[in-house]
Length: 147
Image 1: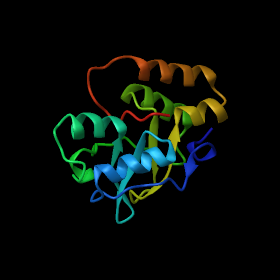
Image 2: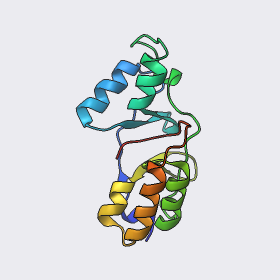
Image 3: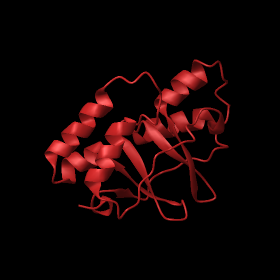
Image 4: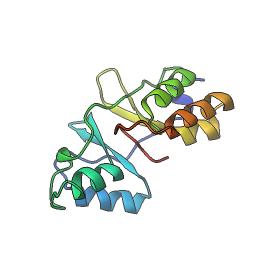
């Protein structure tokens, strides 16, 4: 199965110049734990509720600080024609619950999540292995995104 078969297209995004308060408000309104950060149509990072709590509030930043100050810039991505099992392996290795789907030019075209794979995928064992890897403590922050 390919990523395109289960990904969520047309994802809500935020700009790196919006404030962390804007990001928190959007996340609350949409009931999500993360937002892709997009500038001129290109994915430039991800911001999670954890980024806001630890890097923002815990780091003493004002709620008016820009998303750019707390977002994760080194974001793992996949393509819509990637094999879902391969992407689930990568998600497990990187300990992420969601992965942005980008076009060849780096533009964001969707997002794929562990919960999408559990609902729509055909390999329950692969989903279970990825989820098990994600749940394992790593001691490092990576684009941890709540599904």
